Image 1 (spheres, rainbow, N blue to C red):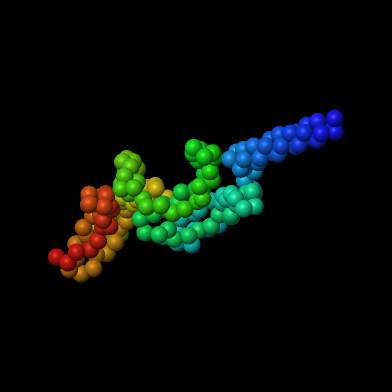
Image 2: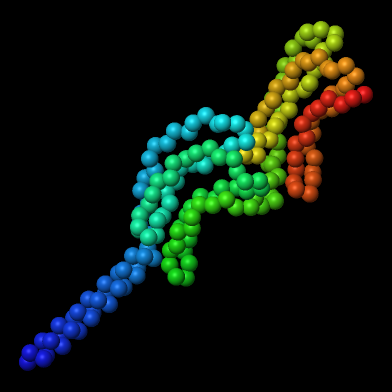
Length: 184
């Protein structure tokens, strides 16, 4: 009779161990809910070359916890965009993919269609030696937005003529060529 209780105890222990392994296995594959992001203040941009990387949680597999990484301004590597970390479902279960810089697809380099220019008021010419440089949109690739640069009256350098800025299609995508002074 005591052998029977021992067998039941061993069998019960084995079942508990298997159940524990199964729950441990599913715990490694099922991501815990991500905590709410803390309030974050975006500081002033150091220069137009910088992009803002928002604060984000990173999953630390070894510690089985999220760690908050505060946002910061950084100069992106040439031809790269920031890809935030995220969960991916794979055959072996849910896996955390870390944040990283990734090569920019060619389509992302081409700006969207330019908005219609605003009505620009050309003020009175301040003097006979001034020329009007019309306003134009400038593409800010870091922000993926257009910024309106208003027109202005300027005194041209002697022997130069103004060549307006323009969009050009090149092998690497559509690029803005700034207006410039050209010797006559």
